[in-house]
Length: 285
Image 1 (cartoon, rainbow, N blue to C red):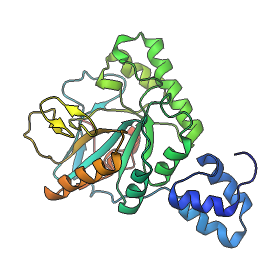
Image 2: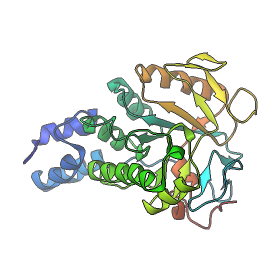
Image 3: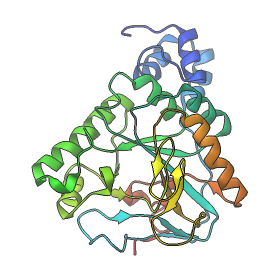
Image 4: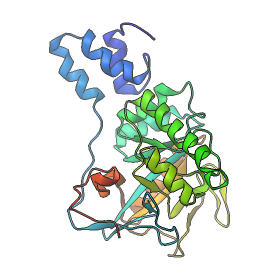
């Protein structure tokens, strides 16, 4: 929708996560169209969520041992004794409205990695999640195995996705998740060239809505040989699939049963790498 947006529609979009135009238009036009008495309330509704931050010195960010050091650091987990896990969700080719409601009402910190060809026409859905507190990060333009591509093609995949996400959601990604976890030294260089500060892989996976090798449908698997349950600092991979709301309820139950909680991974990453933590609070090892 172009031009002015009715106040009621803006409020509905902000509270329920359904759209009256695209997110950036709601955010900027609302301030112009509302009277001063309502502007502050509307701004608060549209504001990004803030999540609890860890105590300084209780974690470190470690370079993945199986990935050679390159132009951009690469991680699989956060080294911490805090009983926290980090929920990250990839792709964006299924759109479950109930999932947005659950994320908002239960205040679930998640991080989204978008493949931009998958989300065309779905700006309202992911802007609702953006308002609920999820950062929108880079998962390439159309999901190739980056390690099969030359440097310039990798740049096109990463830079193109970052540009599209910045235009739609008002913030350029600083984290990259290579599709399939497939990457090489050229990926690190291309990521740096595109403004990426950190490549975020994963060490555990919830095969939500699909069957995982050896774990069955909706199974949970570790990729590091550290048993079957959660460990502090796990980065969990999920996907936007049909039934995601119910699947999120499922994994939250497992997390709580094991005495853990979901936390915002950006608060465990220093600002120099694109996170929210002070640079002197932790180091890359």
